[in-house]
Image 1: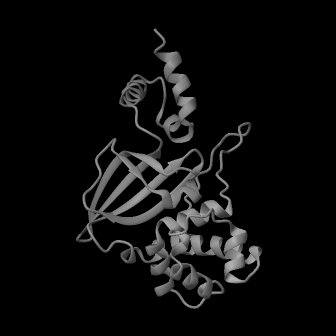
Image 2: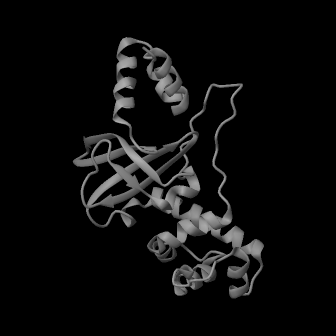
Image 3: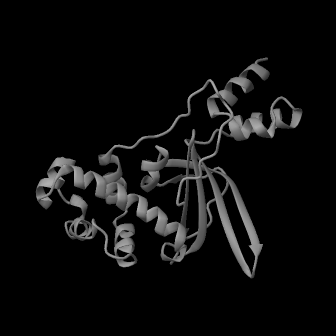
Length: 220
């Protein structure tokens, strides 16, 4: 169990909206945060992809190259098969999330320690990190690294939760994909208060389904 917090939907007719990243998207997530790969390499035993990852770090994930990078080119430059590169990149990406879940302190070295819960449609992700300050409700956060999981890289802070126990403080941010609309949030809270929708609706329904209910409820 590592980074996906999949929640079951009790919908039989509507298909789930699940993000399926391609290999280049995963490579883009890794190249955008090379420090995570360095942390992984320094804190795991030898893996089939270890030499490949060392090489990627050495060439700085081709960030300095002006040419278009493809999986085929990466494989050719490393003198291996494209199938292996595809497999290794997926494993590296997955293992970073697993390491983050098991050893959060490796990713929370500076600033305020945070636990992020990110959601976009039926895609969920949890990640431990640190920031200079605690983001406030409705502020926007861009996290390109998680796009391979949830399909989005921009979120707004839906809720900030502080948990004080065991002589420590845990700060959790609940992030929703997209940009915040404060008028919509007001309408949503109003509909919840007046009983037009329930907490279950907020939990299970997609944003566009809730928008339809809100527009029908407050049409006049």
